[in-house]
Image 1: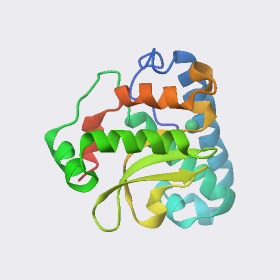
Image 2: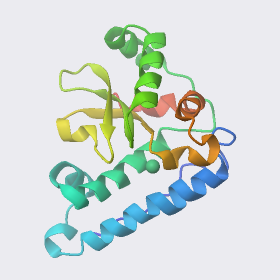
Image 3: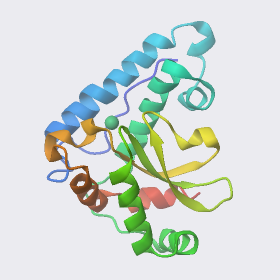
Image 4: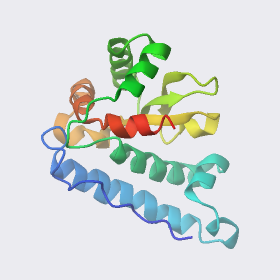
Length: 191
Ligand code: FE
């Protein structure tokens, strides 16, 4: 199958000033597109061309996994954001309170995890194997699906996600990013 770059859920300028149109032009238009193009190059063989993106993320290793997971992760990341300032529905607030103590504790722990992830990677809210919500971080392209968890939310903390707008100040990016999370989308991932 041919992997395609999914359309952004909003125009490139829609997340400004939190994320500029220039950041989206590069992050979506160059980085994400390059992962899709490279994945298509790597999956030309008949034994690989029938596998879905999910199958590639769950079952492959090395360079093929890296490209597939970066396509998956970025597609999910764009969907986790909205220009509409969407507040969290009660079902999500309650699930967070039950499993992570309180919304304030969740917010603080997620922001800290994203800010302090060493090097390139991702911060996630996931439903873990136990069924409870958890905050985890992954290195580089890695994805929680690999350990059986269900992703609900992710923040890209590779430098390419924030360097144009925030330079080295990842913490400031994470603080601002929090305000454009689409909490309805996150709640829908609860299933
Ligand atoms: Fe990225």
